[in-house]
Length: 320
Image (tube, rainbow, N blue to C red):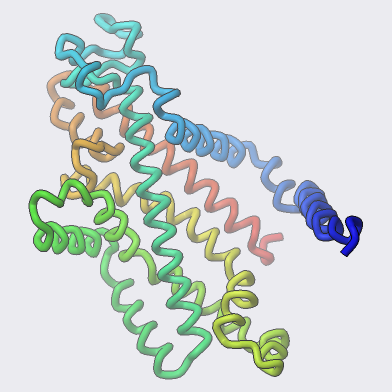
C-alpha cells in the first residue's frame, strides 16, 4: 500500500467531519436555535452549571466540605450585600460556616452526576428492552410491554423510595453511606426506563418492516447486528430528546429523595440535601441557607426543560 493510499481514509474522515459541520451550520436546527433567545439563554445556563460542576475545585472560592477550612465563627453570615454580611461569602454561610455559593457549586456537581448517570442507565435499559420487544414481537413483546404499563401506573418517586428502602434494609449499616449514591442512581434509573422502552419499541417496529432490514436479513446478517448497526441509530433521535427532558426529571427526583433524607448522604450533599438543611433554619431568619440552593435547582431544571422542549419541537417534522 502506498503512502497516498494510506492517507485516503484519514482524508475521507476529515472531509466527512467538515461536511458534517457545514451541514449543521446550514441546518434548520441551528437556525431554530439562534432565533430563540430564551433557548440560547437556557443553553448558556446549562453549560455554565455543567462547567462549574466539572471544575468545582477551581471555580468555588472555598472548599465547603473540608473540615480544616471551616470555622463555626463564620456561621450564619447573611449575603455580603446585607447588613452583617462578609465580603468573603457572597451568598452567606450556613450553620457550619460553609460558604453557600461554594456549596451550591459542589451540590450541583452531585445532582448533575446523579441525574446524568440515572438517565444513561434508564436509556440503556429502556432502549435494550424496547429494541428487543419491538423487533421480536409476539407474546414476548406483549409480556414486556404489560410489565412496563404496570410500572407506568406507579409514580416514579414511589418506586425510587421503594428501591431505596429495600436497599437500606438489605445492605449492612456500614455500607449504606458508601454506596448510597449508587443506590439513588439505580432507584431513579429503574423508575424511568419504561418511557424509553416505549419509544424504542415503536421505533423498532417501524424500522423492522423497511427494505434495508429485509435486505440485511437476506444476506444473512445476524439479528443483533441489524439491531445495533441499523435499527438503533435510526431511533436514537427521539430517545435523546426524551433523555434531555428526563435529565431535568432525574435531577428533581434526586433533590426530592435527598430532601426527604433517603437520597444522597449528608457527607456528599446535593442541592436537595442543601435545601433540606436550610429548611431547618428558614423560620429562624436565615432565609439564604435554603433560598439560594432552591433557586439554583429551579434555574437548572427550568433551563434543561426548556432545552428539551426546544429539541422536541425542532426535531418534530410536523412542526417544520
